[in-house]
Image 1 (cartoon, rainbow, N blue to C red):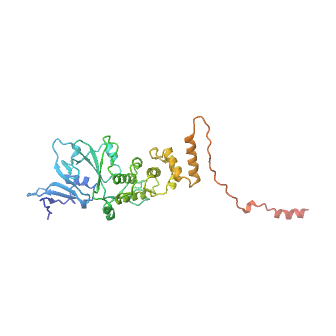
Image 2: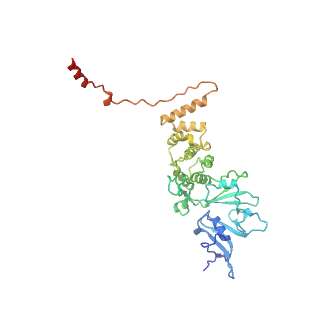
Image 3: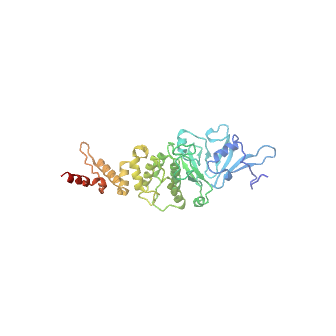
Length: 357
Protein backbone atom coordinates (compact mmCIF):
# COMPACT_ATOMS: atom_id res chain seq x y z
CA UNK A 1 0.00 0.00 0.00
CA UNK A 2 1.58 3.31 -1.01
CA UNK A 3 2.31 5.66 1.87
CA UNK A 4 0.69 9.08 1.58
CA UNK A 5 2.03 12.28 3.14
CA UNK A 6 -0.06 15.00 4.76
CA UNK A 7 0.10 16.95 1.48
CA UNK A 8 -1.47 14.06 -0.41
CA UNK A 9 1.77 12.87 -2.07
CA UNK A 10 2.52 9.18 -2.48
CA UNK A 11 5.88 7.65 -1.52
CA UNK A 12 7.27 5.93 -4.63
CA UNK A 13 9.16 2.65 -4.56
CA UNK A 14 12.56 3.54 -5.97
CA UNK A 15 14.24 0.22 -5.27
CA UNK A 16 13.34 -1.34 -8.62
CA UNK A 17 13.42 1.80 -10.76
CA UNK A 18 14.60 1.27 -14.33
CA UNK A 19 18.07 2.80 -14.72
CA UNK A 20 17.05 4.35 -18.05
CA UNK A 21 13.84 5.93 -16.72
CA UNK A 22 13.63 9.51 -15.45
CA UNK A 23 13.40 8.20 -11.87
CA UNK A 24 16.46 6.00 -12.43
CA UNK A 25 18.47 8.93 -13.80
CA UNK A 26 17.49 11.13 -10.86
CA UNK A 27 18.37 8.42 -8.36
CA UNK A 28 21.77 7.99 -10.01
CA UNK A 29 22.49 11.64 -9.28
CA UNK A 30 21.04 11.60 -5.76
CA UNK A 31 23.06 8.52 -4.78
CA UNK A 32 26.14 10.72 -4.81
CA UNK A 33 24.72 12.41 -1.72
CA UNK A 34 23.22 9.52 0.28
CA UNK A 35 22.25 5.85 0.19
CA UNK A 36 19.05 4.68 -1.46
CA UNK A 37 17.66 3.72 1.96
CA UNK A 38 17.67 7.43 2.90
CA UNK A 39 16.14 8.80 -0.30
CA UNK A 40 12.42 9.57 -0.31
CA UNK A 41 10.74 10.13 -3.66
CA UNK A 42 7.22 11.57 -3.48
CA UNK A 43 4.71 11.79 -6.32
CA UNK A 44 1.09 12.65 -7.01
CA UNK A 45 -1.31 9.69 -6.87
CA UNK A 46 -2.79 8.61 -10.18
CA UNK A 47 -6.32 7.33 -10.59
CA UNK A 48 -5.41 5.38 -13.73
CA UNK A 49 -2.76 2.72 -14.22
CA UNK A 50 -0.24 5.41 -15.10
CA UNK A 51 2.73 5.79 -12.79
CA UNK A 52 2.56 8.61 -10.23
CA UNK A 53 4.24 11.81 -11.28
CA UNK A 54 7.35 12.76 -9.25
CA UNK A 55 6.97 15.94 -7.25
CA UNK A 56 9.55 15.98 -4.47
CA UNK A 57 12.76 14.25 -3.39
CA UNK A 58 13.90 14.33 0.24
CA UNK A 59 17.21 13.43 1.84
CA UNK A 60 16.26 13.63 5.54
CA UNK A 61 19.69 12.61 6.85
CA UNK A 62 21.28 15.61 5.11
CA UNK A 63 18.40 18.02 5.60
CA UNK A 64 17.99 18.47 1.84
CA UNK A 65 14.97 18.39 -0.44
CA UNK A 66 14.34 19.08 -4.12
CA UNK A 67 11.18 19.94 -6.02
CA UNK A 68 10.75 18.05 -9.29
CA UNK A 69 9.60 20.34 -12.09
CA UNK A 70 9.06 19.73 -15.77
CA UNK A 71 11.78 21.37 -17.85
CA UNK A 72 10.65 24.09 -20.25
CA UNK A 73 11.06 23.44 -23.94
CA UNK A 74 13.72 26.12 -24.20
CA UNK A 75 15.45 25.24 -20.94
CA UNK A 76 19.19 24.81 -20.83
CA UNK A 77 20.02 21.11 -21.17
CA UNK A 78 22.68 21.52 -18.49
CA UNK A 79 19.94 22.26 -15.96
CA UNK A 80 17.70 19.26 -16.58
CA UNK A 81 17.83 15.51 -16.01
CA UNK A 82 15.67 13.38 -18.30
CA UNK A 83 13.38 16.32 -18.98
CA UNK A 84 12.91 17.39 -15.36
CA UNK A 85 14.50 20.07 -13.19
CA UNK A 86 15.46 19.43 -9.55
CA UNK A 87 15.11 22.70 -7.63
CA UNK A 88 16.69 22.98 -4.19
CA UNK A 89 14.40 24.13 -1.40
CA UNK A 90 17.16 24.90 1.09
CA UNK A 91 19.26 26.95 -1.36
CA UNK A 92 16.95 29.33 -3.17
CA UNK A 93 17.44 29.67 -6.89
CA UNK A 94 19.72 26.62 -7.30
CA UNK A 95 18.94 23.59 -9.44
CA UNK A 96 20.85 20.36 -10.08
CA UNK A 97 23.12 20.82 -13.11
CA UNK A 98 24.46 18.47 -15.75
CA UNK A 99 27.36 20.78 -16.56
CA UNK A 100 30.47 18.61 -17.03
CA UNK A 101 33.16 20.71 -18.67
CA UNK A 102 36.81 19.72 -18.30
CA UNK A 103 37.23 22.35 -15.56
CA UNK A 104 34.24 21.06 -13.57
CA UNK A 105 35.38 17.45 -13.95
CA UNK A 106 38.73 18.45 -12.50
CA UNK A 107 37.06 20.15 -9.52
CA UNK A 108 34.96 17.01 -8.96
CA UNK A 109 38.03 14.76 -8.76
CA UNK A 110 38.10 13.14 -5.35
CA UNK A 111 34.54 14.23 -4.55
CA UNK A 112 32.29 11.19 -5.14
CA UNK A 113 29.84 12.66 -2.60
CA UNK A 114 29.11 15.92 -4.46
CA UNK A 115 26.55 17.26 -6.93
CA UNK A 116 26.83 20.23 -9.30
CA UNK A 117 24.24 22.98 -8.86
CA UNK A 118 23.67 26.14 -10.85
CA UNK A 119 21.65 29.33 -10.52
CA UNK A 120 19.69 31.34 -13.06
CA UNK A 121 22.82 33.26 -14.04
CA UNK A 122 24.74 30.09 -14.82
CA UNK A 123 27.00 30.33 -11.78
CA UNK A 124 27.97 26.90 -10.49
CA UNK A 125 28.20 25.35 -7.03
CA UNK A 126 29.26 21.99 -5.62
CA UNK A 127 26.93 20.50 -3.00
CA UNK A 128 28.70 17.87 -0.87
CA UNK A 129 27.49 15.63 1.93
CA UNK A 130 28.97 16.18 5.39
CA UNK A 131 27.53 12.92 6.72
CA UNK A 132 29.92 10.58 4.88
CA UNK A 133 32.94 9.37 6.84
CA UNK A 134 35.72 8.75 4.28
CA UNK A 135 38.44 6.13 4.46
CA UNK A 136 40.50 3.87 2.24
CA UNK A 137 38.92 0.46 1.61
CA UNK A 138 41.68 -1.62 3.18
CA UNK A 139 42.92 0.79 5.82
CA UNK A 140 45.77 3.34 5.97
CA UNK A 141 48.29 1.07 4.23
CA UNK A 142 46.06 0.38 1.23
CA UNK A 143 48.14 1.21 -1.84
CA UNK A 144 47.16 -1.73 -4.08
CA UNK A 145 43.71 -1.52 -5.65
CA UNK A 146 41.25 -4.33 -6.29
CA UNK A 147 42.51 -4.58 -9.88
CA UNK A 148 46.13 -4.75 -8.78
CA UNK A 149 47.01 -1.14 -9.64
CA UNK A 150 49.45 0.60 -7.35
CA UNK A 151 48.27 3.53 -5.25
CA UNK A 152 44.55 2.99 -5.70
CA UNK A 153 42.34 6.10 -5.64
CA UNK A 154 39.30 4.28 -4.21
CA UNK A 155 37.56 6.00 -1.28
CA UNK A 156 35.07 4.25 0.99
CA UNK A 157 32.11 6.35 2.25
CA UNK A 158 30.56 5.22 5.52
CA UNK A 159 27.26 7.11 5.70
CA UNK A 160 25.95 5.14 8.68
CA UNK A 161 28.65 5.94 11.25
CA UNK A 162 26.58 7.03 14.25
CA UNK A 163 29.51 8.73 16.02
CA UNK A 164 30.41 10.68 12.88
CA UNK A 165 26.81 11.79 12.38
CA UNK A 166 26.49 12.84 16.02
CA UNK A 167 29.50 15.16 15.67
CA UNK A 168 28.25 16.84 12.49
CA UNK A 169 26.35 20.07 13.02
CA UNK A 170 22.73 20.73 12.16
CA UNK A 171 23.64 21.57 8.56
CA UNK A 172 24.88 18.26 7.19
CA UNK A 173 26.11 19.44 3.83
CA UNK A 174 28.60 21.92 2.39
CA UNK A 175 27.94 24.30 -0.50
CA UNK A 176 31.08 25.37 -2.38
CA UNK A 177 30.64 28.23 -4.89
CA UNK A 178 32.72 27.67 -8.04
CA UNK A 179 34.91 30.65 -8.83
CA UNK A 180 34.05 32.47 -12.05
CA UNK A 181 37.32 31.19 -13.56
CA UNK A 182 36.15 27.63 -12.80
CA UNK A 183 39.66 26.87 -11.55
CA UNK A 184 38.95 26.56 -7.83
CA UNK A 185 36.24 26.47 -5.19
CA UNK A 186 35.35 29.17 -2.70
CA UNK A 187 35.62 27.68 0.79
CA UNK A 188 32.66 28.68 2.99
CA UNK A 189 33.93 27.41 6.36
CA UNK A 190 36.85 25.67 8.07
CA UNK A 191 34.90 22.39 8.28
CA UNK A 192 34.19 22.57 4.54
CA UNK A 193 37.88 23.31 3.85
CA UNK A 194 39.07 20.39 5.98
CA UNK A 195 36.56 18.03 4.40
CA UNK A 196 37.69 18.99 0.91
CA UNK A 197 41.35 18.57 1.91
CA UNK A 198 40.71 15.09 3.34
CA UNK A 199 38.86 13.88 0.25
CA UNK A 200 41.53 15.23 -2.09
CA UNK A 201 44.29 13.52 -0.11
CA UNK A 202 42.46 10.18 0.14
CA UNK A 203 41.79 10.30 -3.61
CA UNK A 204 45.52 11.03 -4.13
CA UNK A 205 44.88 14.44 -5.70
CA UNK A 206 48.04 15.66 -4.00
CA UNK A 207 48.48 18.78 -6.13
CA UNK A 208 44.99 19.99 -5.19
CA UNK A 209 45.63 19.15 -1.54
CA UNK A 210 48.86 21.19 -1.52
CA UNK A 211 46.94 24.23 -2.80
CA UNK A 212 44.31 23.76 -0.09
CA UNK A 213 46.76 23.37 2.81
CA UNK A 214 47.06 27.10 3.44
CA UNK A 215 43.27 27.46 3.75
CA UNK A 216 42.91 24.85 6.50
CA UNK A 217 44.28 26.78 9.45
CA UNK A 218 42.65 27.75 12.74
CA UNK A 219 44.07 29.79 15.63
CA UNK A 220 41.25 28.64 17.91
CA UNK A 221 40.42 25.13 19.18
CA UNK A 222 38.66 23.02 16.58
CA UNK A 223 34.98 22.25 16.93
CA UNK A 224 33.85 18.65 17.36
CA UNK A 225 32.98 18.43 13.67
CA UNK A 226 36.28 19.95 12.55
CA UNK A 227 38.32 17.77 14.91
CA UNK A 228 36.85 14.52 13.62
CA UNK A 229 37.59 15.52 10.02
CA UNK A 230 41.15 16.43 11.00
CA UNK A 231 41.65 13.00 12.60
CA UNK A 232 40.96 11.31 9.25
CA UNK A 233 44.35 12.64 8.14
CA UNK A 234 45.94 9.99 10.34
CA UNK A 235 45.15 7.59 7.49
CA UNK A 236 47.64 9.29 5.20
CA UNK A 237 50.46 9.20 7.77
CA UNK A 238 51.71 5.92 6.32
CA UNK A 239 50.98 6.68 2.65
CA UNK A 240 54.20 5.76 0.84
CA UNK A 241 53.52 7.67 -2.36
CA UNK A 242 56.38 10.21 -2.85
CA UNK A 243 53.91 13.07 -3.46
CA UNK A 244 52.10 12.16 -0.23
CA UNK A 245 55.30 12.92 1.69
CA UNK A 246 55.50 16.38 0.13
CA UNK A 247 51.80 16.91 0.78
CA UNK A 248 52.18 16.05 4.48
CA UNK A 249 55.05 18.52 4.81
CA UNK A 250 53.01 21.28 3.14
CA UNK A 251 50.23 20.63 5.66
CA UNK A 252 52.80 20.64 8.48
CA UNK A 253 54.24 23.95 7.30
CA UNK A 254 50.79 25.56 6.94
CA UNK A 255 49.67 24.55 10.45
CA UNK A 256 53.00 25.05 12.25
CA UNK A 257 51.96 28.37 13.76
CA UNK A 258 48.43 27.32 14.73
CA UNK A 259 46.80 25.22 17.43
CA UNK A 260 46.42 22.31 15.01
CA UNK A 261 48.85 19.41 15.42
CA UNK A 262 49.58 17.06 12.56
CA UNK A 263 49.22 13.33 13.34
CA UNK A 264 52.72 12.38 12.13
CA UNK A 265 56.35 13.03 13.04
CA UNK A 266 57.57 15.96 10.96
CA UNK A 267 61.24 15.01 11.44
CA UNK A 268 60.61 11.54 10.05
CA UNK A 269 58.74 13.04 7.10
CA UNK A 270 61.64 15.40 6.40
CA UNK A 271 64.10 12.50 6.35
CA UNK A 272 61.87 10.60 3.92
CA UNK A 273 61.45 13.75 1.84
CA UNK A 274 65.22 14.08 1.41
CA UNK A 275 65.47 10.45 0.28
CA UNK A 276 62.57 10.65 -2.20
CA UNK A 277 63.10 14.22 -3.42
CA UNK A 278 64.02 13.10 -6.95
CA UNK A 279 60.68 11.24 -7.20
CA UNK A 280 58.40 13.98 -5.86
CA UNK A 281 56.44 16.06 -8.36
CA UNK A 282 57.46 19.70 -8.63
CA UNK A 283 54.00 20.85 -7.50
CA UNK A 284 54.39 18.92 -4.23
CA UNK A 285 57.95 20.00 -3.40
CA UNK A 286 58.72 22.58 -0.76
CA UNK A 287 60.32 25.87 -1.64
CA UNK A 288 63.79 26.49 -0.21
CA UNK A 289 62.39 28.90 2.39
CA UNK A 290 59.64 26.46 3.44
CA UNK A 291 62.09 23.61 3.76
CA UNK A 292 64.54 25.69 5.80
CA UNK A 293 61.78 26.70 8.22
CA UNK A 294 60.80 23.07 8.80
CA UNK A 295 64.45 22.04 9.12
CA UNK A 296 65.06 24.74 11.73
CA UNK A 297 62.09 23.47 13.73
CA UNK A 298 62.40 19.71 13.25
CA UNK A 299 65.66 18.96 11.43
CA UNK A 300 68.23 18.82 14.23
CA UNK A 301 67.62 15.21 15.16
CA UNK A 302 69.77 13.51 12.53
CA UNK A 303 73.07 14.24 10.80
CA UNK A 304 71.41 13.92 7.39
CA UNK A 305 68.93 16.70 8.14
CA UNK A 306 71.58 18.93 9.73
CA UNK A 307 73.70 18.61 6.59
CA UNK A 308 70.67 19.35 4.44
CA UNK A 309 69.95 22.50 6.47
CA UNK A 310 73.60 23.56 6.19
CA UNK A 311 73.59 23.06 2.42
CA UNK A 312 70.38 25.05 1.88
CA UNK A 313 71.61 27.84 4.15
CA UNK A 314 74.91 28.05 2.25
CA UNK A 315 73.22 28.06 -1.15
CA UNK A 316 70.72 30.72 -0.07
CA UNK A 317 73.49 33.04 1.13
CA UNK A 318 75.75 32.42 -1.88
CA UNK A 319 76.66 35.27 -4.19
CA UNK A 320 77.26 34.88 -7.92
CA UNK A 321 80.92 34.34 -8.74
CA UNK A 322 81.94 33.49 -5.17
CA UNK A 323 83.23 30.13 -4.08
CA UNK A 324 81.07 28.13 -1.70
CA UNK A 325 82.31 26.81 1.59
CA UNK A 326 80.01 24.05 2.67
CA UNK A 327 80.33 22.60 6.15
CA UNK A 328 79.44 18.94 6.22
CA UNK A 329 79.10 16.93 9.37
CA UNK A 330 80.95 13.69 8.84
CA UNK A 331 79.80 10.41 10.29
CA UNK A 332 81.82 9.47 13.37
CA UNK A 333 84.58 7.00 12.64
CA UNK A 334 83.71 3.59 13.92
CA UNK A 335 85.99 2.20 16.55
CA UNK A 336 87.75 -0.95 15.47
CA UNK A 337 87.16 -3.91 17.67
CA UNK A 338 89.94 -6.45 18.19
CA UNK A 339 89.42 -9.39 15.88
CA UNK A 340 91.39 -12.57 15.36
CA UNK A 341 92.76 -11.56 11.98
CA UNK A 342 94.10 -8.26 13.28
CA UNK A 343 96.53 -9.91 15.71
CA UNK A 344 99.97 -10.70 14.31
CA UNK A 345 100.55 -14.19 15.65
CA UNK A 346 104.00 -15.59 14.75
CA UNK A 347 104.17 -18.22 17.45
CA UNK A 348 104.04 -21.11 14.98
CA UNK A 349 106.95 -19.67 13.03
CA UNK A 350 109.04 -18.77 16.06
CA UNK A 351 109.23 -22.41 17.19
CA UNK A 352 110.48 -23.50 13.76
CA UNK A 353 113.02 -20.68 13.63
CA UNK A 354 114.42 -21.64 17.01
CA UNK A 355 114.95 -25.16 15.74
CA UNK A 356 116.83 -23.93 12.71
CA UNK A 357 119.20 -22.00 14.86
